[in-house]
Image 1 (cartoon, rainbow, N blue to C red):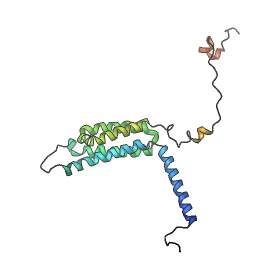
Image 2: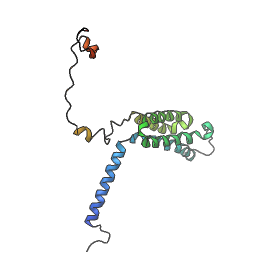
Image 3: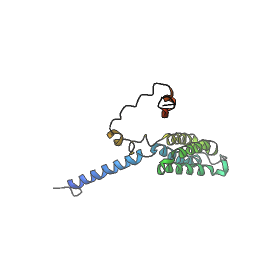
Image 4: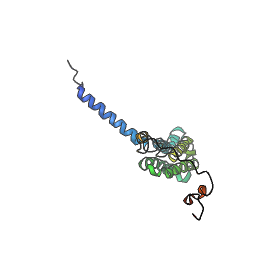
Length: 181
């Protein structure tokens, strides 16, 4: 007797095929953008946003802490860091801008929002911004310019050797001959 919740073999093969396609699609998406840098920036923003809440829960009520910029800087910097991380995923062609802004936001959080989310948010932001800044489409595995397209290209012929010297080395249009010929 079959179990009432058992899935037929054909359906389970279809589910496996669908799952493999979804995993392949996510891998291609992840490799075609600065995924880890954006994830670190989002985590940094979340930590900077959560640090003041954790501070109020952990410290006694009679201890008054002075918040910089009227207590709103952690909201601003944390939200901008989260948005910056999400935009680095949405617009990978602007990775240099998002990386630089992420590092600057992380460094600004040190002085304006509880030592950069107790240093953890600042460090996550600096690492994430650096990863986003350093990312390039050529290092991704899933792009059309890398991976299978590069492996299937025919071997290139060796480069021609440089000219032996003379005028042809500096002025290739002369052909190295005399001006009168």
